[in-house]
Amino acid sequence: MSDDCIFCKIVKGDIPSKKVYEDEDVVVFNDIRPIAPVHFMIVPRLHVAGLNDCDAAHQSLLGKMLLLAPKLAAEQGLQGFRTMINTGREGGQEVFHLHVHVFGGGSTLPKT
Ligand code: AMP
Ligand code: ZN
Image (cartoon, rainbow, N blue to C red; front, side, top):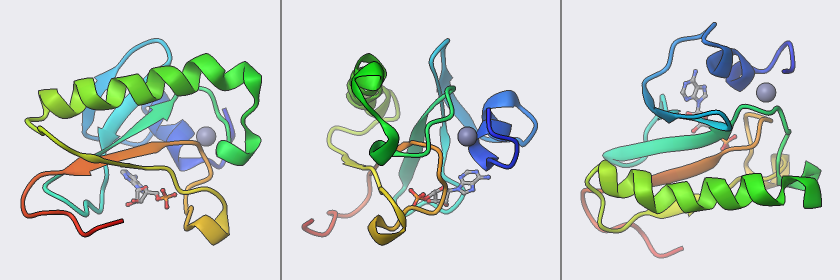
């Protein structure tokens, strides 16, 4: 838990979110500014700033997050989807608590 982290506050329930799924390791909720008809984020309960801060200790958590993506996407009605992990300011990261975006639906996604 990091005191001034918005995703830690969502994980704790101090800030509301539209939850899609949760278990002992992750909370999954809809992005407040969706870029596709379905757009949610897979967020670990553990505060880790991003992929640059991960090491072998996070291997199973990262694997779990990625394996959840197709399962939850299918539950949301997506036959295909895109995942995105922004890393660091230069990578477009705005919230420095690791998360995997999963989005899709509607018209065809742009290439890359
Ligand atoms: P990024 O760090 O670039 O992967 O982007 C963070 C994402 O979090 C953005 O797509 C925001 O729309 C989203 N976001 C920020 N605050 C909230 C919130 N309170 N609830 C849901 N999504 C949020
Ligand atoms: Zn956090």
